[in-house]
Amino acid sequence: NKTFKNLDERYYKERDSIANKCGSTACVVLFIGSHIFCANIGDSRAVLSREGVAVNLSLDHKASDQMSKEITGEDGKIEFDRVGGKIAITRAFGDFEFKVYVDHEGNEVRKNVISVEPEIRRYDF
Image 1 (cartoon, helix red, strand yellow):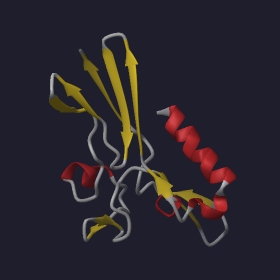
Image 2 (tube, one colour; image 1 turned 90 degrees about the horizontal axis):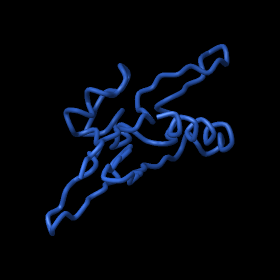
Image 3 (cartoon, helix red, strand yellow; image 1 turned 60 degrees about the vertical axis):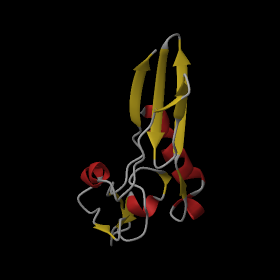
């Protein structure tokens, strides 16, 4: 969790001129012995073939899914299967127009409509 959050914050600080206008999904898979860990944000996907059978390692975080609707912040209204009618995923790097706004006094305020917190799954094989 910390790695994804730190990367997102670094992107915001170092690329603030474009960070509001774009973002990215990510899917990271780590193998440790007989354990597989999958960390995912957005609609990137990891699939493992086990004896010819596809095993989904990740879950897409689409605004159209009921589970994703439940994780958006209180300002995250789903319209036309998109958060705020604009973005189709509920977790992403960047896309800070859904994470931060500047109030009338010039202060940055976190609104956390979408999240950078990955869903982490563990599989034992």
